[in-house]
Amino acid sequence: MVVAAAGQVSAQAGDFRVGLEFGQPSAVLIVRPAPLDFRIGYNFLSGSEFVFLSADYRIVDALPIIDFVHLFVAAGAYTQFGATTPFQLGARVPIGLQAFLINRTIEFFIEVAPTVQFVPTVGFDLATVQKF
Image 1 (spheres, one colour):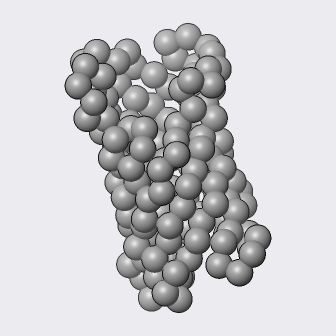
Image 2 (image 1 turned 135 degrees about the horizontal axis):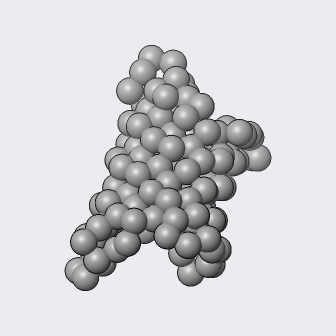
């Protein structure tokens, strides 16, 4: 898992955020008009380059655990494709912790997203859990 940051771009906390994630895939741009998360990413690892797209709905968002640390749970869909990666389509369930800093202007988070692949075959593989 990799910690990533997303900066708030609106006057009210939680309304709209734009940020970056680093993990698997390599780099992802996040656009978050609450309660939705949209991601577009690219994996830069040689021999396994692919484009990644996802859309999630945050079922639980910013549930306080301790002080500035919060829990989130979402449900959504993803697709990925590339020259050496077959087209994939599936469902994902992102679960993570987020820490808000500087009056909720900056957010650091860790996330894992178990997935169920529907295309090209139906399957669940712990090795393909998306980690950010």
